[in-house]
Image 1: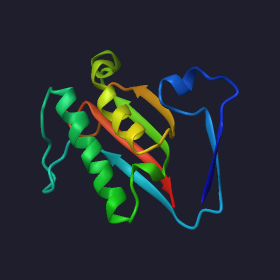
Image 2 (image 1 turned 180 degrees about the vertical axis):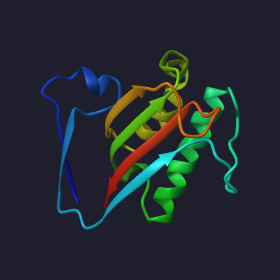
Image 3 (image 1 turned 30 degrees about the vertical axis):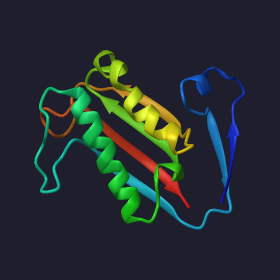
Length: 131
């Protein structure tokens, strides 16, 4: 698989994401459902703690990738949904650091939403990966 960043402007690279990515030669594509701070038995965790929720949602995202034989380095698209953008920003470095360590700068959109499907959840990560 070959990835080519498309950045007609460069400010996004400083924030850890590309404006676009051209992927060629991929053999497999994984579409990842939104991952939240849920335990392995499906129970919501860390009610009201956005930092802990981001950490667990990221771990759950990595678990789906691993089960498919992939890692964060395979992410080409990441959607971040949050009920509180302002509360998320001070903790976003946790996710950005993991992506940076993996050499990944997936195209990213962050959206503030009024609520997520599971009451008490404040963050949801949805992605697309190719290998």
